[in-house]
Length: 178
Figure 1 (cartoon, helix red, strand yellow):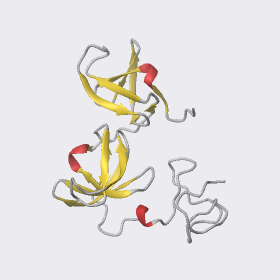
Figure 2 (tube, rainbow, N blue to C red):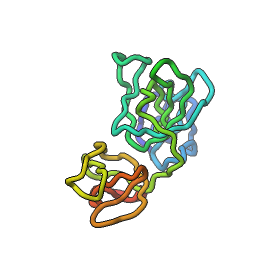
Figure 3 (cartoon, rainbow, N blue to C red):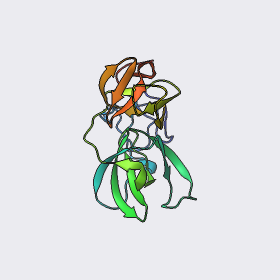
Figure 4 (cartoon, rainbow, N blue to C red):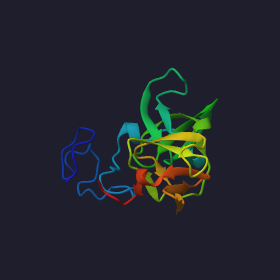
C-alpha cells in the first residue's frame, strides 16, 4: 500500500528496506505514509536526546555537517518539531519528528514551545503579520506545509501562537486533505 520510498527490500509495504516491518505497522504517529524504516538517513548514531524544540524560522536548512557550507540534506518548516542530540558551535544534531531525517540545524532557527499545531499553511507562501492587518509589519514568511497553532479568528485573520496573524484563507486544519 505504500510506494517504495527508500529502495531496497521488497515486501508488503511496497518495497521497504531490509528489516522494515512486513505489515506496514511501523508507521509513526504523524499519520499515514510516514515510514518508520531503519534507513541510515533516519537514524541517530550518536548522543542522547538533549531537548525537543520547534522550528521558529520559515524554513531551516538541515545540513550534513555542522557548517554553513555543507550540503543541505532537507529543510525543516516552521512549526515542525525535532529532537536535538548534540551541539557543536551554532549547530545542533537534530532528528525531525515528522519524517525522521537527521542532520545539523542552526540553533538560532529553533525555539522551545509546548504549543501543539492545529493548522497548516495551504497557500504556496504566506506571511505572518504583527497585527490582523495586511499593512502591519510582516514578521515571517511561512511556506506551504508550515504548521501553526491557531488561537482565534478575527476579521479575516487567524492569530497564531507567538502573537502573529496569518490571513485566514491561507490555512487549513491539519486533518484537511487536499
